[in-house]
Length: 196
Image (cartoon, rainbow, N blue to C red; front, side, top):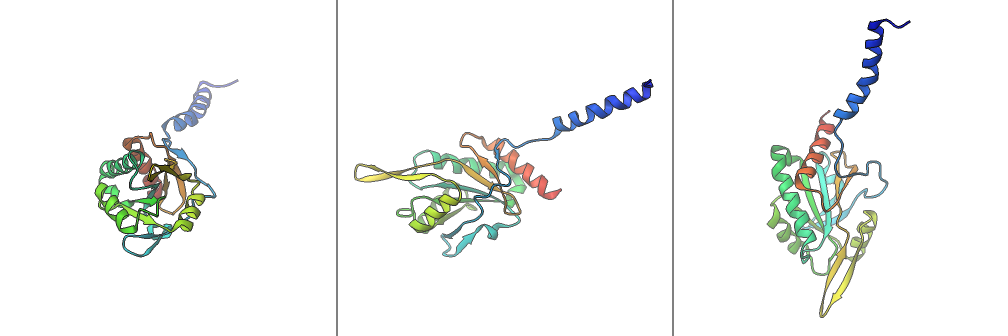
């Protein structure tokens, strides 16, 4: 026969895990922790030097692939990243935003540097030749292709941003529709995790 005290203890033991599950916050972006792709890049910046993911160890890294003549998706993604920086406040010093061009023919390192700084002075634009661009895009599962438009061309490309944690591990795939507030909340979760 169960005593009233034993019944209360059993009820508490059954409810406690449920309460913990309810209070645990989860990512709003797609959690890709443990992915065996998106492991690194080796590309050149406007400063003339080669950049790799290891250069940013100890910080969160947000990577987006696009091109400077993009009419809507790329400026929207970079504007969202700039707003995320604002929302993070003092914690923003622990976030590096990187824009990787898929149009190396037109987006020289100098053009990329000017373009990214227009959104936020701390943003970095990275460039690789055609072979390096293709290899990096393949490593990150990024789709892109040149589309002729009369005498010129535009670029079709996927619109996912990638977030790496402070240990350099790919953790999140951020869909284009995710808001800056949701992205900042996800970043804060990763920063809290790193500090724990």
